[in-house]
Image (cartoon, rainbow, N blue to C red; front, top):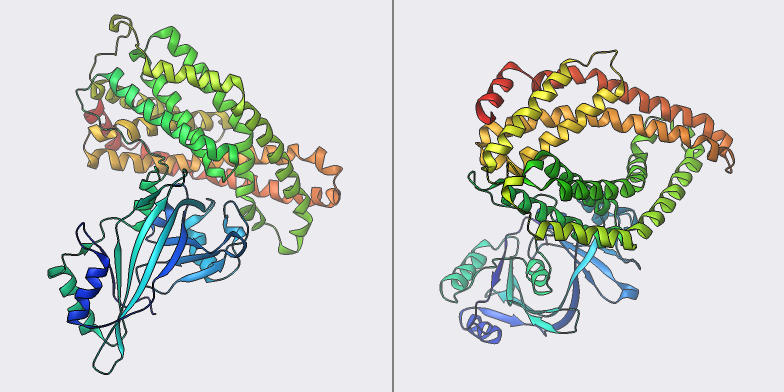
Length: 518
């Protein structure tokens, strides 16, 4: 069926019995019922629900030995299918070449497709025919139950999918009118996937990477800070299983970002916390950040591999295969070390102590100067101060400045970005949004500059190991081309710094920051 044929999805409210609905429709239309089909499907999406965000439904049908991925963009639309293969999860490269992979690749990117919920369904196809006995509307009446881990079947809302047939718009319009005005049906309030995931105890919106905490301008700073830190701690815990299982690289990335943001809150709002416990927890989070770094650095190198190859003549790509193999080997070794650390008693005890710090009493407010101060006052002061320091540091950077100066400015930029992410909602959007935009532009060039420097350094470190690999000597010759490309991109980022910094530190921007946050 063409994708542009109108279609609808209705939910049957309580009290509307599916067989009774079919009988009622039979009194108003020539309805042909087909035998109901039992079906068990698995809802598939990324952990952060990227397909949901894109309006795509993906499900797994059939047995594990002969499973098929089925993708629909809207109820009643023609599906795209592909054999699933035997995988615990599917990266883009695991999918067979074809339309389904082509459609999903730009949405999924580096994330894994995961089984999120199992649903047992009974599907009854129906057809509405005209006086010539031609099918003019197609329907699918479905009852569902979510299958949870303990084997329980949790009933879900029965649904009716209605799809028109090309060339017959009026029968579809009449049927929809009858369903909405006489049958009491309403548009399905949530997708079947969302309802099934919620019934199984999951979050239909998936694992979050953004803090979701409502703050008041007059809220105590210590209360606001702890609320943000608890939300971030939840993100660390949500991403830990996927990191340990190595489902995709973004679990580790999001875990590290949540830890880094937590460190930033503790640093920027330090006077809301008791000094000695604060120092211990800052050191603990710094340790977690350090043990996760090597694996993430190698993830970035491997994720950028296609981009790096694009700068090398195609006839020399094969010579670089030993480099890629060596990176993968190093990454596997780093992941084994990381997994041991994250499963070990030190991490378990460290994290339990950090959670106890967030959930316990912080002590007398007299020992914490900013504890009772309004969060808008404290955060606003920090935003203004960090911004002012960035402007001063950025103005001192010229062509002779060492790379560390740009890296330090990038780190301060992250501090400012996190402050604006967590607390920017306390000020008008038309002030915060342009500030974030100019900061992001600056961070982009600073990030590229730092990443390319690190990657070039890591590539040089491969030389000794590469010399002993099969094909290593030839790969060493081409490796120089990769390093030259990384250095060229680093220089280009540095050349773009002045323009991005000028927008960030413009007179208008500085006045606006001083007027709003100081």
